[in-house]
Amino acid sequence: MSFWDSLLKIVTATGNALAGVVEAVRTLFEGDPETRRKVAFSVAMIALSAKMAKADGIVSENEVAAFRDIFKFPADQARNVARLYNLARQDVAGYEAYAEKMASLCSSCEKNCPILEDIIDGLFHIAKSDGAVHEKELTFLMRVAEIFKMDEEHFQRIMARHVHLSGDPYEVLGVSPKDDFAKIRRRYRVLVSENHPDMLVARGVPEEFHAIANDRMAALNAAYEAIEKERRAA
Picture (cartoon, rainbow, N blue to C red):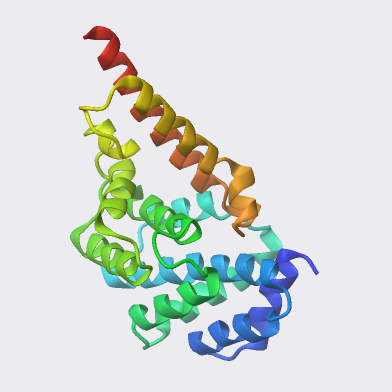
């Protein structure tokens, strides 16, 4: 069964409650953890994007375009994606309870889980698409990150890749201006290795979401190049 067949099975097997989608992910793929991670990640991205749009109160064309940019789905699946998105927007349940359930499906990590970081990254990509991450969106993202057991320093590094692109490149790489360049280079290489598309596949991120990795790599490369230029000038 393909990834899209699996997602279609989830959508068609549930009624008009988002809780039903979550429980279906848990039970239908209990014996196939790899597929469950991929489907859970996709459901989390679609539904949390919808919840964030609801929190902000406005769904702009830029946000819709950004969603399509990070989620490459076949044209014949558009109706199913839209159905799941609308289920999430209409569901009366709070996003916090939903985020807790999705975190338990996506990962077994206790803290700063990479696949949950991928979800936060994707949400930032959508939130910033209209030129700024608004206050309500940032509050939403901070709370989801807290539910995902992400510490504040880690969240700040993710935010720096999206909100402060002209700001501190050291924060983007998680290093200090006091560090020597050799240490910074090692840190950069570790981050590049950790965020290679093959690593995303290994932790259960569907190929359809690899624009997240490309966006992240662009920010990491820009930060490293800025530090390298600064050190050479000094």
